[in-house]
View 1 (tube, rainbow, N blue to C red):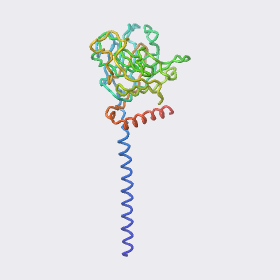
View 2 (view 1 turned 30 degrees about the vertical axis):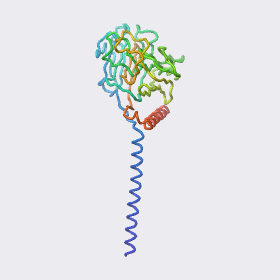
View 3 (view 1 turned 90 degrees about the horizontal axis):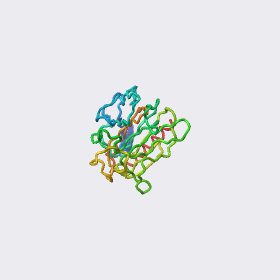
View 4 (view 1 turned 180 degrees about the horizontal axis):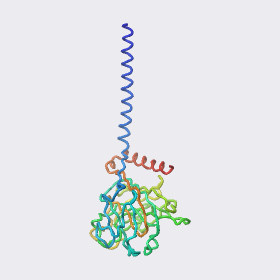
Length: 299
């Protein structure tokens, strides 16, 4: 009986040690995962209404949603011109998320629909965009056409010709490419063409004023560095705001209305600013995000 009792105690001790070892291993891996990656998506669009968003349409005051340009239908942000009476009159609009971001990974899912308003300009056919590092909409003049910003330009195909998307346009800004200041207003990415009314998921890595990457299906289609105020294509503007040469380290995100109907079903962001100084953690998080985009593209 004594030997039997000793064996029982030994088994209990062994099981307890094994359980403690397994638990410690699991906890350690969880802690390691938590300290390595911090992938927390924040939904900027809640799928129900425009809470948190502010419209600014040229020739109109901040907050005036002229002719209901921006609305929410069936869980999507809808940009339409039904109330314009076929008179667009250069009333370029932007829907701003009312918060500034500095380092982040942004995803925007969009599709072009319907027909362009008859008075829209030819270049604006199936043309829209997401403005990155934009100026505070409260500092825009009433008649200002575009916010000082970096534009991730969205273009839709016509069914036959090549037309890249996630391009770069620079209203009131410049960037650095290949080690030199890049001053042309727009440049194309190396993306494929997305024809018809298909949904496109465009993602962007923006790390303050260091580097910006335009990413589609997990592949970088365009990248540049040192976004800064400068250049033209913004009119009119407040000279106190447009300080040429000033680095763009943060700014507001906005969605465009440029005369062609478009829908957005998702606008989400991973705020990387809290881990920006931890380069190891930052790089691991970015790699995980891009890998996840590649997986999404396969589905």
